[in-house]
Amino acid sequence: MKVVLSIAGSDSGGGAGIQTDLHAFAAHALHGATAITAITAQNSTGVRAWATVEPSLVEAQIDAVASDMAVAATKTGMLGTAAIVEAVVRAVRRNRVGPLVVDPVMVARSGDALVDASARRAYVELLFPLAAVITPNLLEAEALLGQPVRDVAAMREAARALWALGPAAVLVKGGGMAASGEAVDVLFDGRETLEISAPRIDTPHTHGTGCTLSAAIAARLAWGQPIGEAIRGAKDYLTEGLRRAHAVGKGRGCVGHHMVEGTR
Image 1 (cartoon, one colour):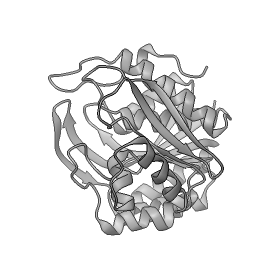
Image 2: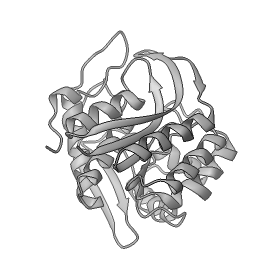
Image 3: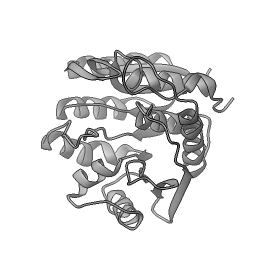
Image 4: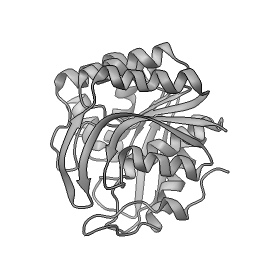
């Protein structure tokens, strides 16, 4: 059975992070393995507390999985600190982990920074050059480039500028743009720039959408799909998951993984 590895934080409410990654992997008929980087105390209404895992233990988790299983693809989510980014880089370089999808979790929906300047530098200088694709949202693209990214034209420019930082491809996610009929993401792979659109789903239950998209991309890369096909398929998977999104608890609900078929 093919194995996909998620290197990310744990969401105790089950709507994002490691937990939603495992849902997406299972929907794509894959075995999900994990290296937990942080533990959060959260539910559908918000995050109450969180703590990072020791970098050496993050590294040991990756080594343990990769030494025993043939990892077909890997994704990263919340890393939190420069020391954890550096630990992930060491382990990824040392092991065979398949194509690497980097979701640079840096900025909350509120606009608050989730990592400091040293962690951003570690992402750019050490992790991005190892990535098959990075998947920043608009706020993360702005934080990385130090300039506003507010429309599709700016997304196209941002994708090219971020590609110059070393990843093989860049997907700038436009889901946070002012509401319109279409949700547009922009992909640049060093050769061409593509706009990938899907209907915007009117639902308040959007917890874990970024994690879901990057996990689905990794899952499809594990099945051998080329990057463009993997991203289109992952976006279709997320769109259908949002159609079937559901309330869990008193706050923002999550993607309906269990009612969506991935790649089987």
